Image (tube, rainbow over all chains, first blue to last red; front, side, top):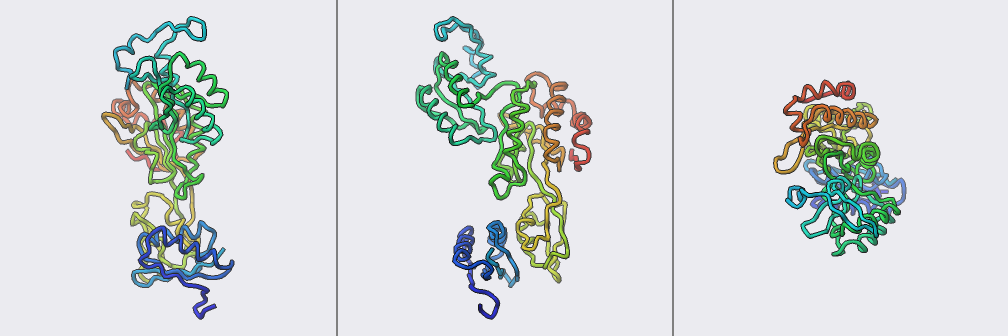
Length: 78
Length: 316
């Protein structure tokens, strides 16, 4: 585990919907339940859509930080 | 459309059906979902597919029947989500109906009566869906299909405010809504809800990040509930916005909203009472939207009070 408490990071800034969600999904599939993936998403459409899709897939968003024009999400694999 | 053609005015013909002479009334046929085509002797057979849903087994069987009876081997997906078998010779009506009956497929209707309800996917498989539109369409089809009314009577069900089933264009339309409720203890002030809300109904407090909700801007779509990572936004109640008096056609009219949170269990009552009011007040050949204009919306709302009361907002 890295010092920030995450097992992997995906920088999805500039990645369009729904590719950003697909990338998140594929990354989570390679991880073990309970592991945490950090995802960086743009505001606007990505942040409107990706978090709810992550929830629908049965994962948990445990932390959200807004940093200027983007969001840093920590997702625990369900 | 074709009912204005001159040749349709003489509707009674003698036909030889399976060896026996029978009188056939083309007007009766029309109420049974057989629509005259421009081609001599050929009709469209409209099937009854509430909510535009068919089992794959049935679809396979319908395909075989369509292939056997359609002189051109084609079908058409009607604008009300039902399958139409084209180019069917009227002399084969009895045979095609019997074959359709064997697989449990009913023929739809036209004319002045309650039509097959349309519906989107709703909460059964659409992520945005808030109500079970397919179940509702099935109920309307079972309970009200074919009920005589002064003119055609179209109903539809949309599961969310995106309104794919176009409830604003229906004689009576039902669109799914959810009333969101926010619980402070669960909220971490992450601001995702204000980002997720496309209506600008949620602003984030600049200091705490917690939501400031404006119910006047809310269209009850539930995006905040779905996006919230900590379940601080939860559904308080689900229901239907009820819209009446809409229609498409040459002179389209937009339906008016008459109830904002009608629960599932009251939908049948709303339809039953609306049909009752329409039959009592509507003139022959007059869509309910025009009846409402002539008689007055207040008259209707007063009649509907037993159903719409306690479901809030009656916007006129």
